Length: 225
Image: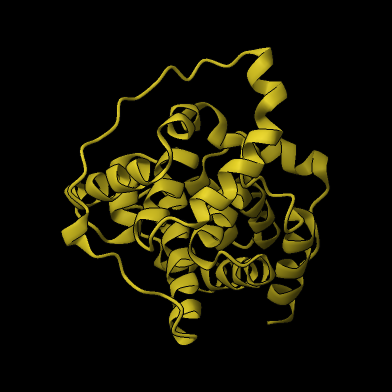
């Protein structure tokens, strides 16, 4: 398998994830690169939320993509491909931290916190200029959230997944997702939380690790399988 030319990828870019999956299964295996490039940000954020360790994130991303490729025929379209893929990433990440006994599940008894008010998400030049500085403040604050609440917050507020998607991805009820999201928001300082919905998409960008490197290594592993 080789890296597909950018112009060729552009020609296929109008296809849905499900159509691309079908083409990959039909023998156009190089198109798996398109799926990776589409979902690199989400895969990175999901792994980062659980691992909190940049050194491990890239390896988990690669293994998750390899796992997804190896089990692509098991994708049954009952949920969007992005949700199915994110579930693989979450499982791989949890396996890593539990193997090292670094993961303590969230105590649901302490999760009864009222939802904070949502705020205007409109952007402005001032917000754009401040986003990098705010990211430096936001990332460690998110890292300090409790296990369970952190993943929900990352997927729901940072990645922008729906409550139903997060519920499916993390195998939680929607009530549990809402409770954990409320706890995560309440654990962050109120002034920080007010800015989260507008600045969070600028945090945890896939500059660490390099997306192109992840794609190239996965393609190499798939080709050698």
